[in-house]
Length: 477
Image (cartoon, rainbow, N blue to C red; front, side, top):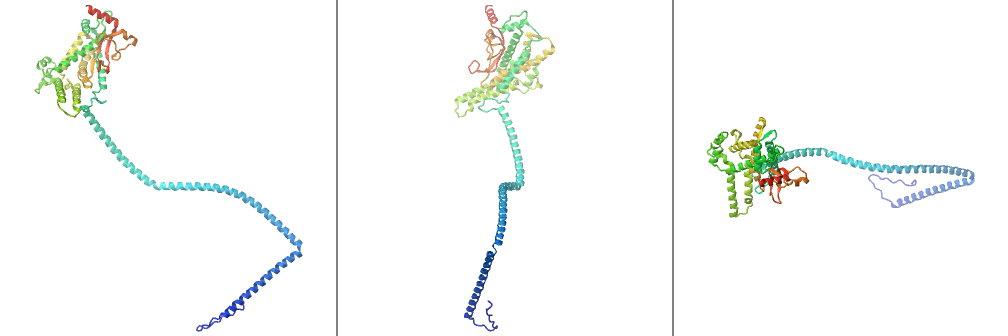
């Protein structure tokens, strides 16, 4: 490079021609010069190495000492390296443990992070959910109001339907609802109520018994007139009196229901106490005293027409076969509620007034009540008892389907616990018989295997042997 020739610089306006030969010569010279320099460096390096080797040969102990020192140093270094290796091994193990812990912690952190993300995502929706909740609350409140309106409407319709059902009933359904006053359950309650009232009315406690008249009554019903000591059996008289009153009221009521505006009978029923009522009944030009009889008579005629119509006219309906039963039920249901009942301000129905007097007079024939207040109390009971007897025996038994029957057990009848109220041991049943039936058996299909008892008969019993002796005495004399 030192022998390289400077390039010739031409003037600005002149351009010298390029000489290829000179250029090649320069390159060759430069290359040779570089090779020489490299050779000299190699020779110098070899010379230095030989010089060092020569010194080592000349001074071997010194070199050995250095080598030993170097070896010791190397051993120290190696020992240190081993110690460091052990330390590093322990640290590596610890690191591996820590790495596992960190991995677990990292996984837990990832899970926590995922949970946090989910919670954050849920947190983002809290307001939206709150708004939806409020909207649902509003919708629910609106629906609750609609439901309540529907419930109120349903209740109103149900009540209205119940009224129509009570008044008319379904065309082919003969049963009465649980709350209908004409159902069997209510009938049983009312019959038991009548029993209690009759027992109270006919009670002979704190009364004097007219034995002569009482014996006539007992003989009339075929009962024993044998006395225990000097007194008649009061329990027996009470039982006979109850049957006598029931039969008297039923007989009078049936006669009244057969009378359709009979003027002669109407005149016979007039008394000083009910004359104003009779005049009130005639004030509109109609004889209202016999509405019940007219209604029953008209119903019977109507049922005859319905029967003929079903036989002689063709049709596909089933209502016509149920109509007679429904009409009977409706008419007698109305009669059981309104029969012989007039406004209080108009006094008593003439028939009830006349029958009340007859029952009081009949009861007083057989007993004398000592206390005036007790006498007034008993007389006040008469109207209610008469109305109960007529309502139950003349009307309400005919409301049921099938029609309910009643049966009076004859004297000396065998005791039947299934059909009678009897308080005695089963072993004693063969030793006693009926002395008087104070209240009849009430049920359906009486005397049949399908008999269904509504209320049992109330009976007064006597010893079978005593009953046999009385029957023989009655036959002989």
